[in-house]
Length: 63
Image (tube, rainbow, N blue to C red; front, side, top):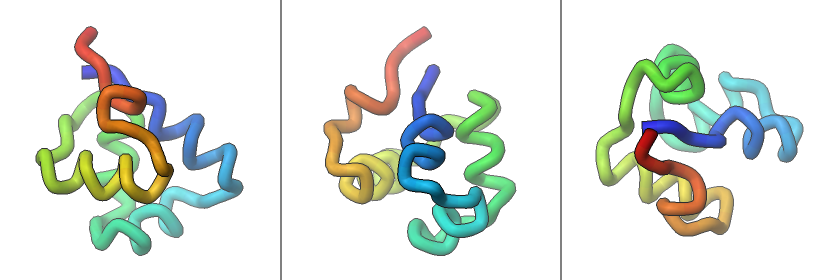
C-alpha cells in the first residue's frame, strides 16, 4: 500500500517524533509507514486520517 503520510506531516511542520507522539506510536513506526515498509493497522490508519482530517482513502491507496 502506498501513502502520503510524509507529505502530510511535512505540510504541518511536524517531525517524525512529533507525529509518533501524537499517534501513540514509535518514531520507527512512522518511518516504516512513510517508507511503505509497514501497513498500519486499521485503528492506526483511522487515527492518522482523523488527525489530518482526511478519509483513509485519501491517505492510503493500493499500489
